Length: 115
Image (cartoon, rainbow, N blue to C red):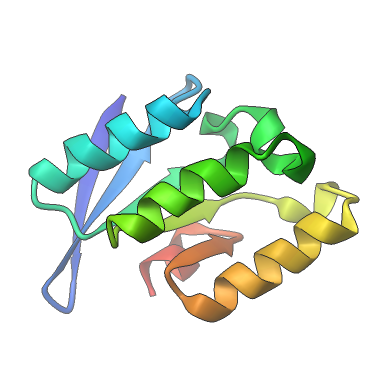
């Protein structure tokens, strides 16, 4: 796992680059959050491919559990990926609602994530 640092308007952003799954459980999300918080990052960019597929099935509750941790600790998270492939109406609605808060965002590319 590589952490690429970005700075945008005095905000420290960590972009996680890896070919492996980073988040497979709620604890993995909490560990990532804690590690990057203590390194001084304000926001995290993570790629869809680095998150276990069960996260995107809202029935598992995994997305809610993980994203609640990010909200509780006030760490912004942006997930970059192609979310059109998911047919779930509830996931599409969840993504729309999350993007409105601007605390948890789902975007198509890194440029959008950095904005």
